[in-house]
Length: 329
Image (cartoon, rainbow, N blue to C red; front, side, top):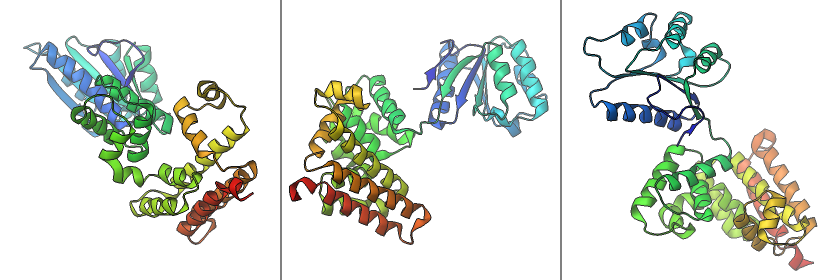
């Protein structure tokens, strides 16, 4: 659910939804519309793009009605409004009409910042809808989705869902809804695997896990499946790098409880437990070899080589061998 950062009343005269995450922007709109229709089932909803909101249009939409009907006016991509229309909106912010809720969707960048600042200065209720580019943000989103539907899911299950479905929040939200509807009790990693096995096995993190575990054949199979299903090579090198760095961090850390190491290394406790199992067979020299292999593969997939697939296969094999370096010593 979109994070609220100001007043918590969906029927505030003006709601400002700021960010570029489409799902969260749509939810911010739906929340206002739902509240308005709860107050008045006959609420009139106008959903407008910048080209539809011409100078004078807002004044027409917000003028007093003979029947005093409740109305929600949604303006999408407000940063793209014309200068004259922005003047209209700013004037309206100074004296919003009763029974009307204005919802401004703004990307939040430098473009149209004057309107953004004016809405904030006028005391608009603000809802943050940031693009979730980091895996940790998407993981937090999935956890929040499970909490929102009153269901319990293990950390491993949440991570597996993110690994399987990637960055599309709509897919993640839909998956949580499906699992919550179909599965009783706590949702664990095995449940996610049953529902999304093909997607999970194609993920870049599965390639990395099999490689750092020394399972070369399985890692290569997962790699080919990932590439065949459209996973970007750069995502695979990123996952390989994360996997090898995690091994290196745990090898260099002093022993201790998972919770203590989690605080020291900046990893969740469940991941500490998983990486601990993966470190068997690794040596510091092996980590160095693996990191060099990842760096070479990264250069290869970013234009430094003629065959990105070969660069990735070479890295996977080298990492898997490095994972067994202690046994060969």
